[in-house]
Length: 174
Image (cartoon, rainbow, N blue to C red; front, side):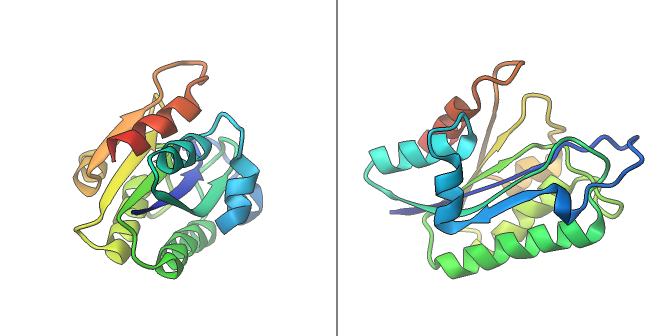
């Protein structure tokens, strides 16, 4: 069994004047994403640990993270979306996907940018491959997000000290 693991995290404050650009993101792909998050309190680290403990193959795809800021500019968002899709294509056949999102990303075009990312992943992997989504505790969970994912979970604590636990939980649910 092969399970993809990806994370794209940005919390939008729509009142912030300065947009979030590509340069605001720290982006790693493939094994570099695994190495960057190994041993951290992150959803990716937790998901990979559970997947591998179950005897499945964790396929690290993408880890993109930016500080909370204004809406993500369209070029950066399009690049993130395209990168997610290209990593999924490069990964080949997956049996499931863990996708960690904040749940409050906005662009000037997409008020529900996280749902659009789930849809973009679904477009590549198809309707038969399960998608599990982990979210921040105060995500803006929309009907579109719920309809696009097979299973969802979120942090249980604020301050967020259970990010790794959340990654473990969503991987276990898949």
